[in-house]
Length: 404
Image (tube, rainbow, N blue to C red; front, side, top):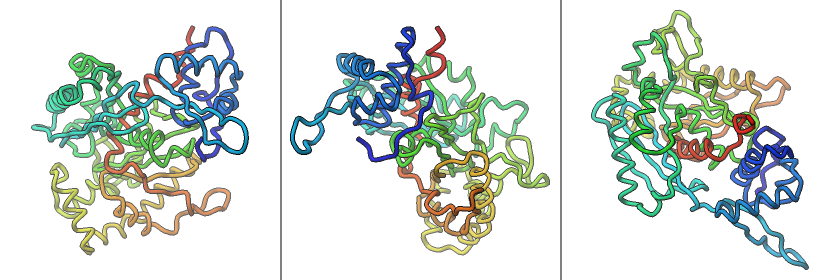
């Protein structure tokens, strides 16, 4: 059993004893096992509000199908040790791809998020067609190198910089902070047909949040915001135990909050958006680096490690914006914690957070101490989150599964 605090009742972890809701109840039980396991059946019953007999029957069915397995707890005192249930990690595998205008990072994971294969490659051009070619090649590479695991592939998760479905924003076609056209329904249809597997899309920040929620520090919380610090700036939102994607999968695009109406033009069509000041793209502009070059992030990290005054000065300059961003996220969502992550090294993010101190107090007057964290999934967070998105689409409860 995990040591994290109990999950409050939510749609994803609350069952129903309606006869016709069997599929939903199976998914609810599996969601609790996936996010909380190893866990006892009694605790599953308490969390889901399902009867113990219903939970026992569902777990039995899942075990017979090879989806979960039972493990004996450590003996404590007299009597037989209790049994816990957990996912059978190698029952199935998912592929995840982190896609941007420069490259594709690929990972295959089991149901526990253990990476069993990873690869990647650069793009020949900053186009959806080039990205598709690379994804298809990497998927074939996985099938060739891991034929036994490939037989148990059930889905593909894709994560790319949004926003998606942009209208009348031609700047986004070439802007380094986005890859909006990659996420078009037409392009996703082409990929699904080529890969011969279900395809799920998330923006990169939401994917990173999902990766942290299922496999990282976010596992211990039911409501948090994950701020993705990349060439652009975005946030993934986990609310009451579930990822909140928004109506067009663009929830959390905090980089496009307007902080200066007279500021520089942004790829979204507005002016003075937050990511025009607080992002790696903005730092590249300050340093005269090419944001579309693979070498730029490495160069920034090297300058930071050397204590370059221009980099440190930029961090000082964006400290007020970092405070403002954290305050806005806190006031809008009231999350348990806020997690920072991205494509840059963790100590760089920690330096930004340190320079932003002191942070604004919460509404109840308490400080933010202990509520802001650096993510634990590291540079693979987005690709890892993409594999989790595929798992989430297959296993997690949703309203659609209750439409009878």
